Length: 123
Image (cartoon, rainbow, N blue to C red; front, side):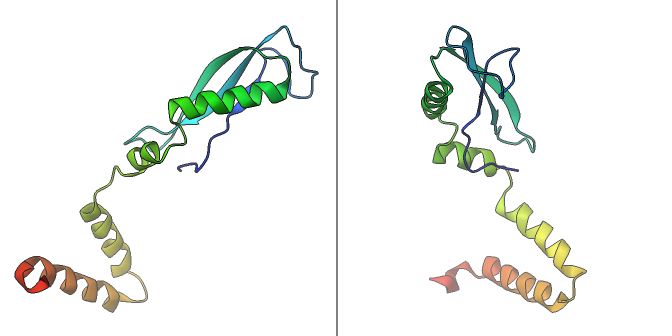
C-alpha cells in the first residue's frame, strides 16, 4: 500500500529510542521506498552523520528525503500507476458481475463498447 508521506525513522545503531541521544554517535534514517510495479515497498537506510540531537537528525532526515524525491508527486505517480485503465476496468467488471448489482456491470460494458465503436459521435 502506498504511503502518502514518508518522514522515516531516525535512530543510532545499537541504541533504543528510549535511550538518551548521544551527540558523538552517527545517526541514520530508515524509510520505505515505493518501487514502480512492486506491491511491497523496499526498506532503505541513509547515514545522516553526526547530529547533536534527535530533532536535528529528524530535520536532516526530512531534507535528505526531500532531495531524494521520496514524497514528490512524480514519485507517487510512478509508484502507483503500474496498472492500466483497461486492466483496472476488467478487474472491476469481474467483481461487479457477482455482486448484488449485476445490471451495473452490464450497463458499464454496454457504455464502454459503444464508446469504442463510435468515436466520431463523441465529438
